[in-house]
Image 1 (cartoon, rainbow, N blue to C red):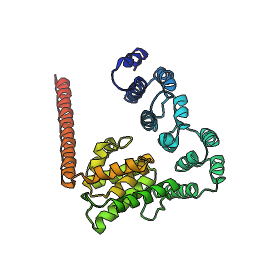
Image 2 (image 1 turned 45 degrees about the vertical axis):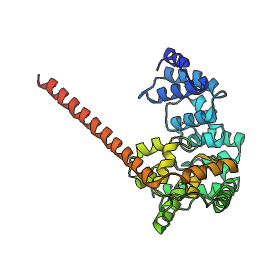
Image 3 (image 1 turned 60 degrees about the vertical axis):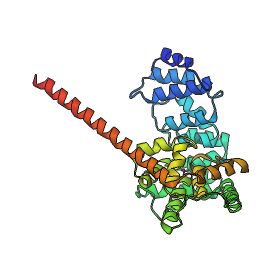
Image 4 (image 1 turned 45 degrees about the horizontal axis):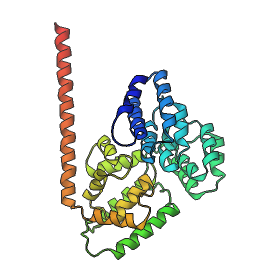
Length: 326
């Protein structure tokens, strides 16, 4: 992606120009298999000044998209990493560009919320561990304990792995939602099948979302839906959206369970009682059978795409073989 092409994106219509340009440029950069240093420098020159103008939603997309790229521009990564923690969390958790010294600086500048996210990384640096332990924070200590299970060769979270405790904000949200649902039972249909199996699935997905282990949640959610993980990742996106809501409803999850999952994934998505009430009302009006039919359609489309890709590969192999024979 060359600089003139980046500049040409400024002509896109609709929405915030800064949002459109930042999203398009980062998406284009992520599609380059082996970007040159000049590509990274061009992205940095373009994107860093746009951060102050871009919306939180787009900055969150940028952080998530760049979180696992080893060749992303370092200055852009550092700028995003010092954003609000609900935006910077993917980078704090996974970015290979953030060295222990960078993480110590971020903790020094930003404080305990960023420290809690960083504590969920694989950490071996003694100085960084010392800084994290210095908070004497229960959430940080629990996160470090969880990581020790990985370091001991477990390789995956087991049923006995402790789950990070709810934050005070999440506990308040849980209680507010429970109170709201007790007060508003009349007039709404429930999509929740009242069985121990459904409750177990809801609790399992809530715990996975609260772990801030995005990949782990995607795996569990994909298994529950019967979709590929790539497809599930696209459904989850980077915030509350219609497809994700339909997917949650198709599993028979209650409004409370769906809201807690969304809160674990994206932070406090409904910040007042009015928006919370609207969510409960709209969610309860989703017909579970229709939601399941929608998910089945996604599966069919997913299988069709796989088949088309396989046919293209077979045609390419046949063409390559014919060329070699001739």
